[in-house]
Each structure stands twice: as structure tokens, then as C-alpha cells.
Length: 282
Image 1 (spheres, rainbow, N blue to C red):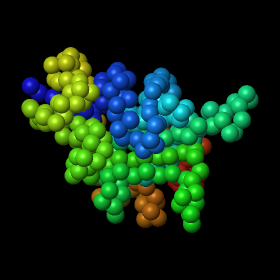
Image 2: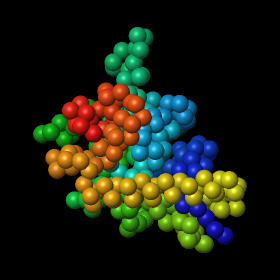
Image 3: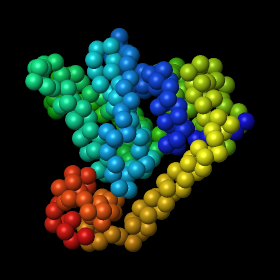
Image 4: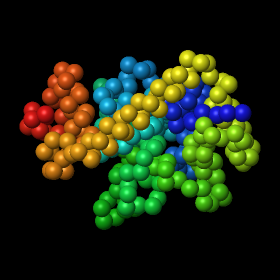
């Protein structure tokens, strides 16, 4: 029995994009939900609503969910990290928060928005924790909190199953993402014992995919490797003089591509955080 990697764009969408009950279980396990809070309803976003960003195509941004208290959740999985990723997550979460308001509503009716990002790279190099939960707190009185936007980042490469008794289902779902690989022949027994995870494992068996789907699966990894190589080469050679000023290398590449595609400067600024002067020099 052979399996595919669940972190691939194709497999991730196959499991969580076509089976809402699996996504509910996954999110209820991974999100920092308060006692009594539970996700009940999911809304898959049309592809037209997912922003297409040059050189940032290795991401899944296609689901918005609602819990039993009306809170919203946005889920995405990022294969390659960039410094501007956090800004984009905040931007998308903010849009979801603002869109709740129309002429018939008052501000007090706005519900908090949670954005969960599964990142397949380490980005918090100075921290050992893999789970990062950001919220709006008073700088001197952390017990004072403003409900509105909450961002959750999970660094998958850092994850190590240490304590199975604490948040056991969360640990098992993360083991599913990090331990199920193309070399896996016999899935861990404790994963199979959980019905939802066993079903998710069944959905990534090679035999469950057509030849065309397997070709798409391989092409996705090829494109990820190509983009990573591009970034590594850019790091080694240095891109433009802006690198010396601490400008994100990947943002420069994104800006170059967007500029070559005829994108307006305002849009390039929005996605890269570069200044107008820096963009004009590219």
C-alpha cells in the first residue's frame, strides 16, 4: 500500500476540500477554541475569490468556516515562507472582518475572525515552539483583550509529538500531516484508530488517484522545488542593491514578475511592501 504526501496542493484539497466533516474535525482540534466553542458550518470559497499572486502560488486559501457563536475562520497552507506572508494573512483576515459590516448592522455585531496558517517551513528561528497564536492584548495588562482578529501559525517542520495526553486529537492530526509521506507503507496504528484520520489516510492512497491526478501531484512538487531553487540562488547571489538594505529577496522577485506582467504599481506595493521608488528601480 502506497500513499501520497497530504501537504501537496492536490492531496490537501482532496482530503479537506471535498470532505467538510474531516475539515471540521481538523479545525476543532487545531484552533484555540474556548470551552463550548465548536465549528459547525463550513463555506468553501470559489476560486475567483482566492487572490492569485505571482511566485506565491503554493498556497491553499479556499475555506471560510463559522462556529456555533458566529465566529469566522480562514484556513490556508503555505509551502514556502516569505516575510510578506504575515502581512497578507492579516490583510485577508481584516477583509473578512470588515465584510461583515453593512448598512443594516452595527459595529457591536461584528464577530471575531481567526486565520489559521499551516506553514511547511520554519520562520520563527529563535523560538522552539511550533504553535504561534497572535491576538490583540493590552501591552501592560495581557488579561485585557480586544476580540477581532486572531492569527494562528503552525510551523510543521518543528512539530514533534511529545505529549499525547494533552490535546491528543491536535497531535494526531499534525502527525498525519508530518508523518504520512510517499515512503509510508504502514500508517501508525494510533492514527488508524481515529475514524476521521483513518478516512483521511484512505483518501491519500495512491490507488485513489487517476493517472492524470498523479501527474498533477508530481508537477506541483516540481514547481515547489523550482521556486525554492530560485529563492536559494537569489540568496546566494544577492538581488539588486535593495538586499543590502534588508529588503525581502522574495518580494523583489514578486515585484519583478508583477511588473513584467503589467500590474499597476499600487497593486505591487500592496503585495510586496516595497516603496514606489524601489519598484521603479527594478
